[in-house]
Image (tube, rainbow, N blue to C red):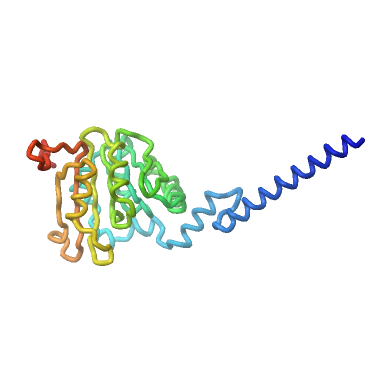
Amino acid sequence: MMKRLLNLSITVLLMTFTVSLVAQEEKVLMNQGLAVNDVDKRAVEEYLKRIPNTHEFLAKNQKRNKLDRPGLCLNLIGVKPGMKIGEAGAGAGYFTFFLSKKVGTHGAIYANDNDKFVLAALEHYAEESKQLKNIVTVLGNDTDPLFPVLNLDMIVIYGSFHDFTEREKWLNNASRYLKPGGTLAIIDGYYPEHGALTQELVENLCKMAGFIPLFHEDLSRIKKDRSQHVQVFRKDYRESKQGKYAKAEFMYQ
């Protein structure tokens, strides 16, 4: 009898402890704005509260399209059908969807961000579209994009490199996800509010991480009302005997 009572007491204590842990976990999740059994749905809702501009609004925003000229940027960096591209700092997915349409059904876009709320919403919009079946969301961190493949044709950073906090570490880690000869394209505007980030600094950071500068275009020459730089680099930096940066082996188209 005593043994049965002891076993019953132990069982009750274990159940109480388990319930307590679940309650604590639920409290943590709820404090993050997430429902325990419906994380993805609540993540999307939370994101939409934080950023009212849905992807549909952004993609149809003709004023922004005219200002940013995404089609021009796609052509300048050399995006082609069938490519596998990792987009870092994809955010709300404005440029992601232009990339997706450009690479087509035989290509793939790995859209990376450090914010799971953003990625949940981006994934939601991608699934809603009947045309955009080639987008895969990837949760990364400040020092590594964590792309799931190691043979990307290109990595693109559109309008977010100025927000990167660990640029040197990130660039060093990102290189391994590109196939030999793969390219890194950075498109950003360098304004006072972006701190000391300049076209020259970006070039030097990329060189130190093993990238060869291929192409630079200041779009303010083309888009008079918009200061924006397009910089393209190739993986596999090699230093010449004179200690200078090697020239690209081909002219960038």
